[in-house]
Each structure stands twice: as structure tokens, then as C-alpha cells.
Length: 79
Image 1 (cartoon, rainbow, N blue to C red):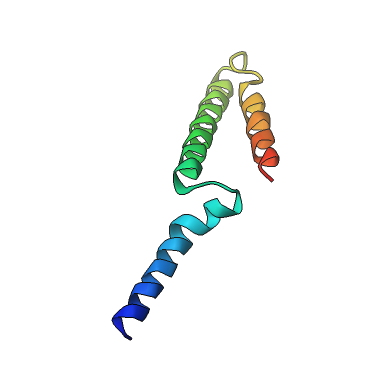
Image 2 (cartoon, rainbow, N blue to C red; image 1 turned 60 degrees about the vertical axis):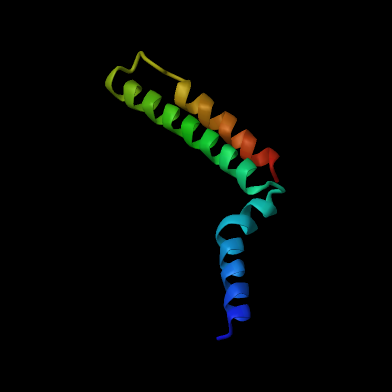
């Protein structure tokens, strides 16, 4: 394999790993990273609320479901 073709295949791999998917939702790599971090944060908050609710049912009665509905709406609005 020549150096030029090796460089091209490396670029294709980097694009496949980091750029292709964000482009499908019209985002840059960093915009997509911010969205994913935000999404992960709220999923964690929903998980914590559900865990608290499991032990003390009077706590966080609708918190997890409200967060998940909001996240679902965010995903739907992107397509």
C-alpha cells in the first residue's frame, strides 16, 4: 500500500468514526458532542430520579418520565 492510499484510508476511517454521523443530523463534531453530553446528563438525572422513586415512592413521582418525554421530543425535532 502506498503512503498516499494509506493516508486516504486513514482519513476515511477518521471521517467514519468522528464526522459521518454528526453530518447526518447537520451538526459538526463538537455540536454533536455537546448534544450527546447534554443528553447523557439528563439521562443520568432521570436514572437518579427513578432510583430515588424506587426506594421512596413519594419522591420524584413524575420526574423521570418528564425528562424522558422532553428528551424524546428533542430527538424527534432533529429529524
